[in-house]
Image (cartoon, rainbow, N blue to C red; front, side, top):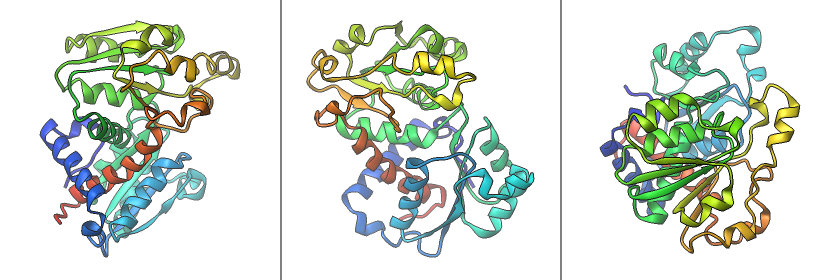
Amino acid sequence: MRHLMSPLDLSVEELDKLLTLANDIEKNPGKYAHACEGKKLATCFYEPSTRTRLSFESAMINLGGSVIGFSSADSSSAAKGESVSDTIRVISCFADICAMRHPKEGAPLVASQHSSIPVINAGDGGHQHPTQTLTDLLTIRSLKGRLDHLKIGLCGDLKFGRTVHSLINALIRYPGIEFVLISPNELRVPEYIREDVLIANHIPFVEVERLEDAIPDLDILYMTRVQKERFFNEEDYIRMKDFYILDKAKMELAKKDMLVLHPLPRVNEISVEVDNDPRAVYFKQVQYGVYVRMALILTLLEIEV
């Protein structure tokens, strides 16, 4: 039995196989419509979510399975003090696979150590968000045709952004990847990512403050929101939240085939005037998220169609 805690739990070969399966699901949805009949997915979300939770639920329903679960800690026995390890033991009696989001780093890992069903980390604090990374990789591979030899700009909250940390870890395994890290000084990528991931693996990167300076050379621009829930005080959040806003004027500086991705939700960091630009693919990205989660459920349940 396998779990997914980090994108690195999958080898590059396994990842390519998973993304190929997701592309086949996109092209032939009918072929997979009954693959999980009689199977149940538990969505255990201790933190609010729209896209990730509904994406997992859509994925399981599209596969012919059913869904149980809770959408906040308040509506679970966590409100009574039940531990994650006890909760997953109980959930294992009800479901065949579990997707768990938790505000504490490492909570899904603890769950996986006490579970008798596969556990998928659906986001743990500022740490990892592996299925968002799989979504990002599928989006890039499907629309660019490759995952190698790309210059990728990561913009916004690079300190607390778990999607950014996961994506860096996943992409460094492909040849010819370069990063441009675009953030204010206070929200720079953490030291352990800079030292232990980028420098240790000899990955070319630069850190800049101005989006305008970076955008002309990028193949991919990955925007992130400044996350209010990760800040300790309102004052710092208000000062940071408007630091980067991608608008039409900035898009005119970019390559004709640059793609703009965003894990969503957006607040104000991408102007709505960018939405109609064909390079803005963040809503397509949401759809790819359903396909990749369908592929992941099938893979972890060892169901072949």
